Length: 130
Image 1 (tube, rainbow, N blue to C red):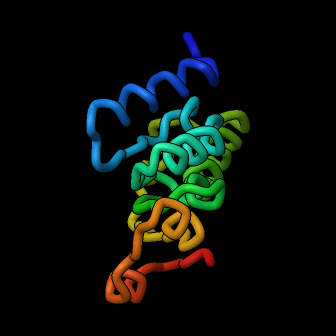
Image 2: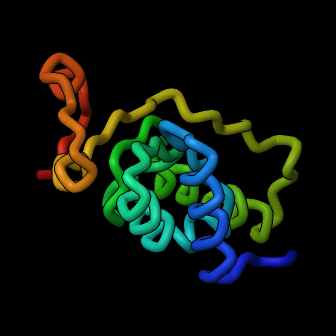
Image 3: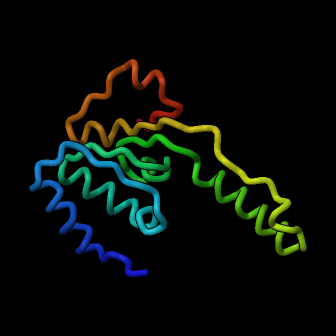
């Protein structure tokens, strides 16, 4: 897999900003999770409100996320792997699908880009980082 360098990420954000984008959605692939601090930093630098797939992005300085808890998914995957390594038939292991989605805001990130998050939206959040 060809991973993007930090400079390539900087160039992509410059291009996005020059194109006139008003906001950004960042998915949750492994590379993006690994580069979450850089991505949050670049979104702030270019004053792009961004929503992320996982709360770990918000904890790293991103604006907001709406999605599942990545650590919960990984814990379930580890249990499944453990069962398989201990002889369980993979076809007999129930498929896990997350049912809880969390809305998380980072007010420091909002302030940094000059965004005011409406109170009714904050009231619905599962977590607000100040």
